[in-house]
Image 1 (cartoon, rainbow, N blue to C red):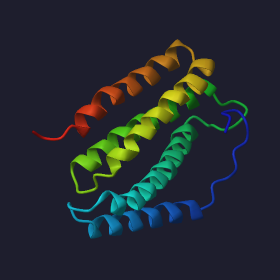
Image 2 (tube, helix red, strand yellow):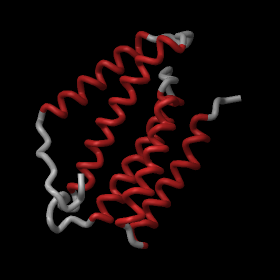
Image 3 (cartoon, rainbow, N blue to C red):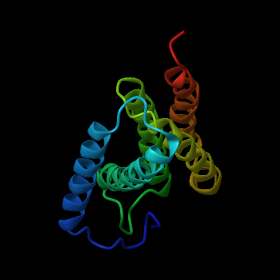
Length: 156
């Protein structure tokens, strides 16, 4: 939603949905072996993408809430920077998680998160930003663009 406009209140059930999604993902990930086929990993990747979407939305809402957003006095540039930071951290977190465990399908989710972050930079950060907000947005997202390919690289 817009930074200055009203956001719908977050129901407590959202936390239950995120926790249930994380539990389902974890239980399914434990079931899969390293030799799982691609067709076995596609549903797991869809659950991971949905969970990443939910966690990213919650994270952006919480970080934006630190500045009093949403509301009439919300700073749109800060909200845009907060959302970019959440996407950058989420991409790096997904890359780290897939590197340290058997959930290789998380690598499939990282690219859409980065593409979504790039589109978000163009559509939200640049129009509403100023130098003080664009610098951290671009620095965080650039750091994610540098770190993620290195984290996804397989050990030789």
